[in-house]
Length: 116
Image 1: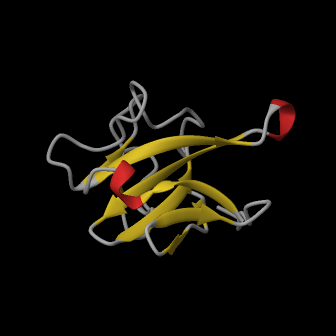
Image 2: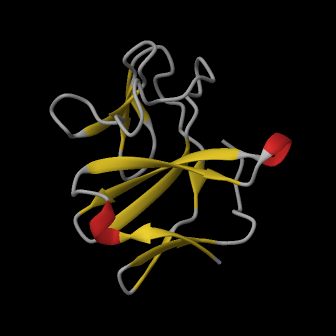
Image 3: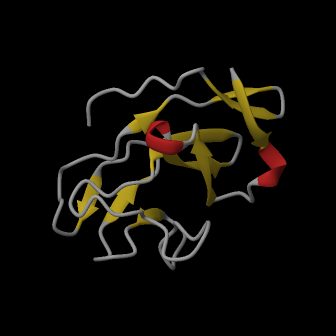
């Protein structure tokens, strides 16, 4: 397991980006805190294959209810990663298994990435 951070390091209803690995094996992910739950996704829009954040760690829509793609404004459900608005409607972000162990957020080594 790789420890990413403490739960309190991510303010509630926001996301934080992390890089796992390096070089060609690097995987950029976003972890969203939703109360005492955490959700992890590859930091890549299924439509444009671009990072979701428009500036480091700015992943959420203005109302704070959805993940939002910085390139074209697509909105994604936090709990499922499903696109609910935008050119990738119905597609999903690629989920990354994240676990809350006490107050620590962890990912498996290496992270298991299901098909998007």
